[in-house]
Image (cartoon, rainbow, N blue to C red; front, side, top):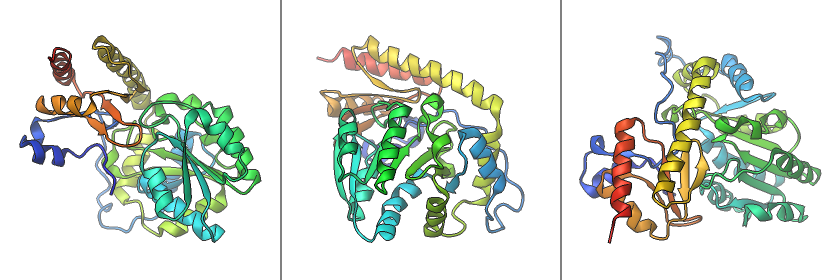
Amino acid sequence: MLEHGGNLNDAARHYGRPRSEWLDLSTGINPRPYPAPAPAPDAWHRLPEPSHALEQAACAYYGAPRLLAVAGTQAAIQALPQLRLQQQGRPAQVVVAAPIYAEHAHCWRRAGHAVLEVPYDDLDEAVRESRCEVLVLCNPNNPTGAMAAPEDVLRWSTLLAARGGWLVVDEAFGDTVQGHSVAAHSGQPGLIVLRSVGKFFGLAGLRLGFVGAAPAVLEALADWLGPWSISGPAQQIGSAALCDRPWQAATLQTLLAEGERLHALLAQHGIRASGTALFQWWLEPEAQAFHESMARAGIWVRLFTRGAGGIRLGLPPDEAGWSRLQDALNTWSQRG
């Protein structure tokens, strides 16, 4: 199993500091989640039937023609390589943008596909290669925040579809840059778009995401994942969050401002970072030492030991958290 952020139990165990004393900045999740309403009294009792209200709310929010609810986008990331293998009867030639959320390349390789990791700047050339059958990228990218222009994504999708291929674009962090989303085009052949409720809405524990694709792909994916994949409470809470326009608008403004604040704070300490409104990342030459310095201050950050390498920081939840981070960065800057 690959290593991920949010592993606060590991931090508490390793450093002997209780969970309650940690400031967890190791994920790119909104630190102030949507105030989830209490589910209906029978939500825990009944088997969860498919929710048309949830699908309609998601289509309206993401601007997609049709969506399939999944138990977090991780469920789709794991299923799509298996589904492709089942449909084609052979492994595919897969290009994965690099660096990227590590589960993408891992899951395609585990299913037996031939995976080539290609830098973002070289994707256009890679797609034009006739051997490329599947392209996978995050937009915006996790962890670097790099973005491909929507017109490029759609052009690549058209090229791949002409040869029976897929373009899988993970827009898990796309809520703060909706102008870059291609979800509205996800009904066209070969384009598969992943969206997450966990990041912007801060509801990672809900395990709810969506896949936009052509109807035949969604039907095959639904059959692969099986019945009752989304709990009743998740359906009800997700519907409420996706319909709450005032909360969404206020949260967007707050996250955009705090993303800029985090970027500026790091710059004050000589750190040239990139990212999104929800996180910042940089290639830290002393990444292991930085991670250790933050941990000694009770701040858990994301250390990348493979792929892109470097450090990723999420947003503090409050002013006390910002102050702790400022103090820890001061300590780091003044070392030696």
